[in-house]
Amino acid sequence: MMTMRPKLLAAALALGLAAPALADGHEAGSKHTIMPEDEGARAFMEQFGFSEAVIHGDTVYLSGVILGPAPEGMTREEAYERSFQYLGTVLERAGSSWDDVIDITTYHVDIDASMPALAAVKNRYVKAPFPAWTAIDVDRLYAAEGEVEIKITARVTPM
Image 1 (spheres, rainbow, N blue to C red):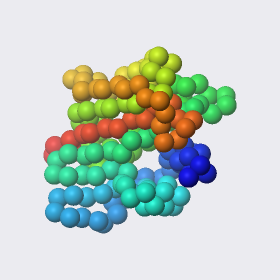
Image 2 (cartoon, rainbow, N blue to C red):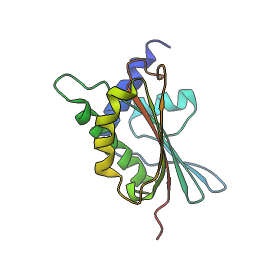
Image 3 (tube, rainbow, N blue to C red):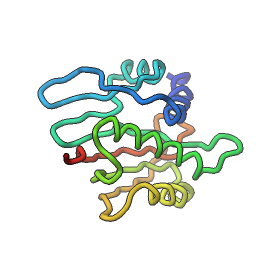
Image 4 (cartoon, helix red, strand yellow):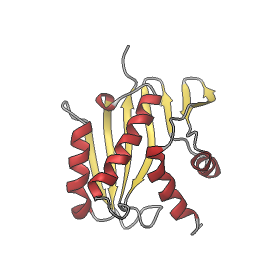
């Protein structure tokens, strides 16, 4: 398990640069799942039994994405920007957008250190009318070196 933590963080950070994924075809009623095309990220999610996102009815539920720490030569805000770009691609593949986000939950291992950069990046993507947002300070994330985990709920973009 210890060797998976750095891989999870690397996968989470690298996913922002990965090609978009397609739905995996697992449907049950109105439930539809989105999985990454990246083989390593997909294998990790399959090993632990979760999807990148689930669409149920007109609601999209994104699994948490771990942010940070910033790679050498990159600011925390730049690193968070990559994660928000990735989250935007997941929303898009699920038939949603940043305009459709209704709830954001963030988990912070140091809320005072991470909140200014996170809020600055979030505010470039999320505009009024604002979604609900709950920020929670925690002892640690699954990836021990992670700084923030973001979980999003959105509606499917109305046609």
